[in-house]
Amino acid sequence: MRTTRIITALVLAGLTVSGVRAATTHHHAHAHGKAALELTIKEGAIRGVFRTPMDNLLGFEHAPKTENQKNSVEQLRQRLSDASRFFAPNAAAQCRPTPSHFSSAMFSTGGQNGHSDLEYRFGFDCNRPRELKSIEALLLEHYPRMHEIRTELVSETGQRAVILKKDNRRLTIK
Image (tube, rainbow, N blue to C red; front, top):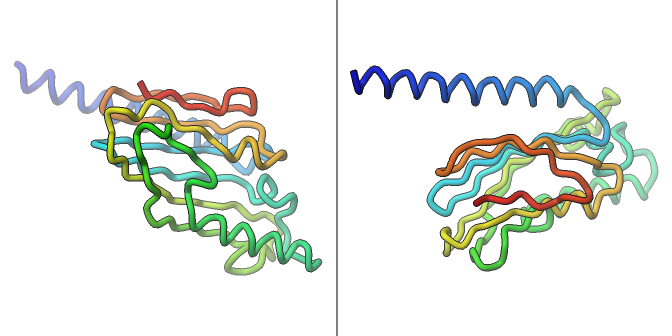
């Protein structure tokens, strides 16, 4: 009987996460001004996948034409190497960024198809995980074309979906 309850709970939890992910994926269908963030926090390790149209970060998503646009693409590429330029766990948790990975047609083909999205995989390792109380989405401050980030959070204390906006950039963990 106990085993049946545990299996049922696991199946329902899987369906809930799948449903939230499907809703976010459906919503993110290349909507300018909007982005999607999936966060997992476990034992002091923060792992995230961030997706957004390149227009939110660069102001364009076509192949860069001017020197200014080419410089903007290169500067973004350099900034993406450090997740702390985009997301900030609260200082008391003493988190340090782990190597990040990113992909976009803008980087591989130069945005030739006219629509470029970014997929950004990043992480932090926290020395004091019990002190982790929040993560601030710095992107909403630094990129004026980005207005909201639909966020899915899965942690040891549960799961939830939150919409971060310019006037509410902080995701509370506990």
